[in-house]
Length: 173
Ligand SMILES: CC(C)(COP(=O)(O)OP(=O)(O)OC[C@H]1O[C@@H](n2cnc3c(N)ncnc32)[C@H](O)[C@@H]1OP(=O)(O)O)[C@@H](O)C(=O)NCCC(=O)NCCS
Image (cartoon, rainbow, N blue to C red; front, side, top):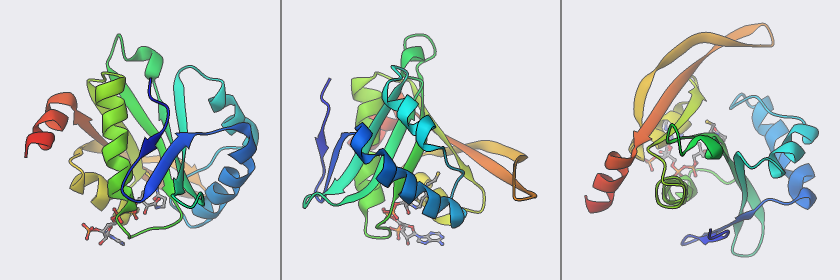
């Protein structure tokens, strides 16, 4: 499978052990800003060796690390056809980069892994991410009400998905 991807402004490349410390720092900051929960450095390292997971870093064309994506559920695509966008994070926001990365994620999921369904969850207070996923054609499936507890606060998760025929139709639109 193709391992690196290019958009108008960005490069996506497989994550390596050498970048995990930097990613964990990015994740800690975004976690403290309330965008999502994070994983430990050890957990990130396990993703690298997990055949069920695909992990890419996102850089500018000048090689500045500005984010990462993690896809999960690759081994199950044969059976259920369902891939989870487990994490998507950018440090440079509101410049259209999210849209560029989503285009590649959809290609990876539907064209390369031949998924039937691409899904994700998002904190219900993360209005920007919700806006971007809906803009990119994801449909809201529902809300897991107050299913996570963080710092003694309950958080609800919105589940969104896109199906392969919806992806194909969006390419023709
Ligand atoms: C969510 C994320 C991936 C989106 O990427 P991005 O590069 O910022 O997205 P874009 O620049 O393509 O689009 C941003 C859109 O959000 C809109 N927006 C910005 N702030 C907003 C807010 N508070 N509420 C609603 N929409 C908002 C912008 O107007 C823009 O929409 P438009 O282009 O339709 O006008 C990125 O912001 C990010 O990584 N955020 C921090 C981590 C995170 O939330 N990850 C997702 C967890 S599920």
